Amino acid sequence: MNVTIYHNPKCSKSRKTLELLLGKGIEPTIIEYLINPPDSQTLVSILKKLDATPRDLLRVKEPRYSELSLANPALTPDDLIEAMVANPILIERPIVVAGTRAVLGRPPNNINELSLE
Image (cartoon, rainbow, N blue to C red; front, side):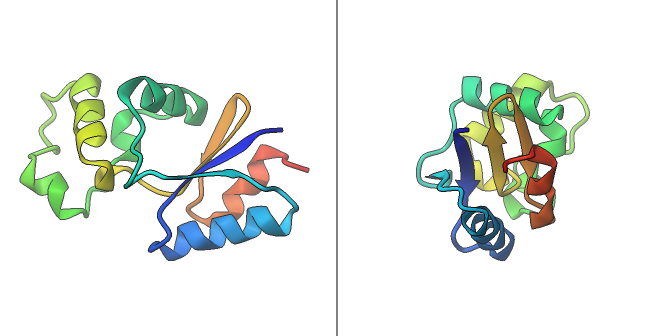
């Protein structure tokens, strides 16, 4: 099974999630999303696999969130996706995608929900 991790090597949860994957013998495709952010179509696909909304994936404590007034309830899902594509630091991490499913690696043990073995 192909496994992809949207990874930030500066994030301890992201590093731990990657370590858990490697410990299971899984060599995931590693996408450092701050360097290579997902486009809107990819982000929509990830959200579907997570069964999540754009708001579920936003890092609300990130200063950029406030700077862009993303708490505004009038913003549409497309507005939020556009903000995340333009400012990938706003995307919660890490995200592990395996086939038609995905999980947020917070906590890292969430990867067990993917039945990767």
